[in-house]
Image (cartoon, rainbow, N blue to C red; front, side, top):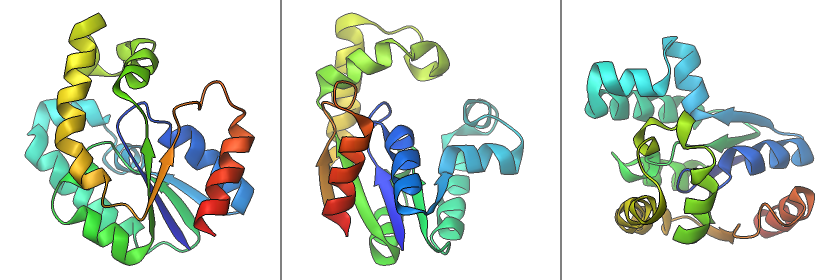
Length: 172
C-alpha cells in the first residue's frame, strides 16, 4: 500500500501523514525531509543555490524512488504534484489524497509558521492571503487529480485521531 498526501503548505500533510502511518502500521516518508537528508541541505538552500528547476528535478527523482516503497504514507512538498508527470506517477502507484483547506484557513495556519517558510517571511494579512490564493489557484488543477479529496479545514479544532480515522475509512 502506498498513500500520497498532497496539498498546499500548511494543509497538514506532515501531521496527518504521521498519524495515518502510525494508525495503519505503515512507514512514513516526507519528500522534503528525504531530500534534505539525501543532499544534506535544507530545501530552501537548494532552491537558493541551485534554483527551482534543479530542485524540481531532484524532487521528481525522489518521487520515482519513494513511489517504489511498500506500505508507506508519503507527504509531498506542496509543489511536487504540479511538475513533471508527478501526479500521474502517484496516481499510478498509489492512492493520492488531496488535503483540501480554504485560503483563509491556510493563511491563519501559515501566519504562525512563516518564519520557517522563507517564501512567506515578509507577507502578512491580505498580502499573505493574496499570495496563497494566487498559488493555490495555479496548483488546484493538479491537486484535484487526486483519487480522494479530504477536507481538513477543522484540523486544529478536531481531534487528529478522529480525522485520521475518517481518512483511513475513505481510503480502505
